Image 1 (tube, rainbow, N blue to C red):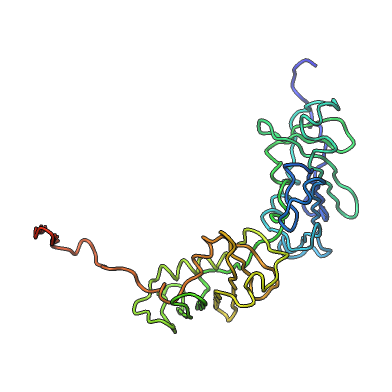
Image 2 (cartoon, helix red, strand yellow; image 1 turned 90 degrees about the vertical axis):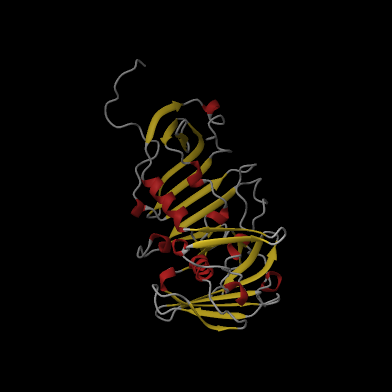
Length: 340
């Protein structure tokens, strides 16, 4: 057709969706090299692809992440960020131009029946949308409604919204608390030189931490060590899940490190740190059965012996208070003195 100005709304292969309409979203990712891993971290589902099902509870109350659950390929809480991104992008879907209606171009744009990411959206027990998400090109994502030939440009890079490993649909929060509400920290280490228990506390967020009890003498407490520990435990997020590991295998029947944060108001959170596996550690919240996998660099801020809390400064003074500086070299008995 001759070029001209489009009048009216652009054609939509997917009808407009509202967030409060949705109550079931099914995402089937194709098999092959790009297939996300299965719930146990293996690639056993790569040949057939992975089907992820998210379902909303009957009562639409509270935070959105509390309304939805992951129901397949396993039952678990859903990751809040992944869920909010998915739901908002479905409600914001906009389209550019028609790309092609030729069937032989489907594979090229990765929206063929055996290769595209298949998305099914339901609400009120009815099908609201059924489409396939393909490759991203020049700021658009190829999209085709199931059963139709027309391939359209969906505005934006959307493939990552739907194409996630199963673990990234699951809620990976081990502990989430407000760091300024922590009033006491207790750390117990075992099986290492200098191991023991230390307890530090403060009456409010503006006061320095003080040692309440320690199995090793801590003459001067290093505030930054406590600050890093509190910051780490306040938003502790797992890298993966160890669904098939037992407490004994993970070393959580006798943890090497136990960290307990006591909060304002009496609530507390306890983290158990088990065995190391390469660059990872097995970890769990004492209140739940789920075993998580956390990276070593995260655990390093929690795995502290009492002696690690000692002040490490050799000298401490204000630079502008110095009036002279003497440097002596004993080998050749030379010395330099600077004054001001």
